[in-house]
Length: 296
Image (cartoon, rainbow, N blue to C red; front, side):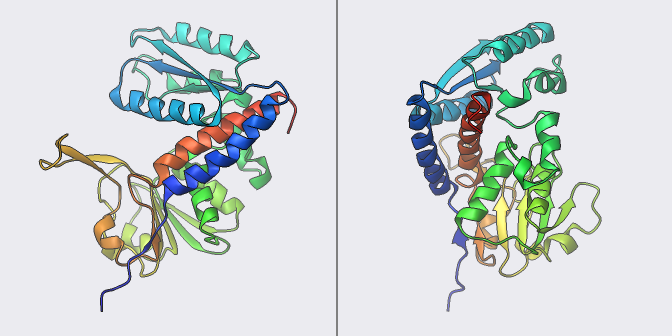
C-alpha cells in the first residue's frame, strides 16, 4: 500500500480568497471617495525585482488599487531617493510606499526603510512596525508580508498553533524573526535556528510545524522532518535544469519530493508562500489607507 501523501497547502488558493475579500473592501472605500494608492519605487533593472513588481501591480489592478511605479537608474544618489520618499510621505493621495529591495550597494537600505512614514510602510519593515509586533497580536497592524502570509495559510487550513512545537530555520528581519514573534503572540512554542545552531536536525525533527526560510535549495531533507509534521517552505531558488527551456527551474528550501511522503501537510514552492506575500502587501495597503483616513 502506497503511503498517503501530504495535504498541499495551496498559497495561490489562499491568496485568491484574500484578494476577493480585499476587492470588497476597496469598493467600500471608493464609495466614501477614498481611492487606495500604492507607490512602488524601482531602482535599476534587476530582472527578479521587475518580475516581483509585475506580480504586485497585477494584484493591485485586480482589486482596484491605483498603483504608481517610479523608476530610477541604478546610479541615483541616496539623497535623491530619500527626497522622493519625503515627497511621497507628504502626498495625501499616496497610502502605501514600497521600495523594491535589494538596492544598489551605494544606498543604505536601512536608511531608506526608516525614511518611509511608518503608516505608509506596506512592506512592514520599518522599526516602528516591527517593534509594535512585540507588544502582541493586536499591534500587528502593518506586519511584514511573508510572515503574515504564513499565518494566513495556517489559519485558512485551520492548523492550530497553540502549544505546538514550531521550529523556524532562518532568522532574517524579513521572515524568520517576525514570524517567530507572530507565532509566539499566538501561544506557539517557538525555536529559531540559524547558521550557528548546533545539531539543526535535533530541532527540525521534533517540530510539529517546520518553517524554512534560508534560501538554499533542498537544504532540509526528509530525515530532518518528523513523521506527520506540517512544513512551510518559504524558499525560492533557481537550480540548473537542462531539460527546461530556461535551463533552470525554481525550487524551495526543502526536499519536497521526499518530504511530501512523510509530512501531514506542506506548501509547494513555487505556489505556496510567494502568492501570499503579494496578497498581504495588498492587504497592508488597504490597512494603511484606513489608518490614514481614521477608519481604523
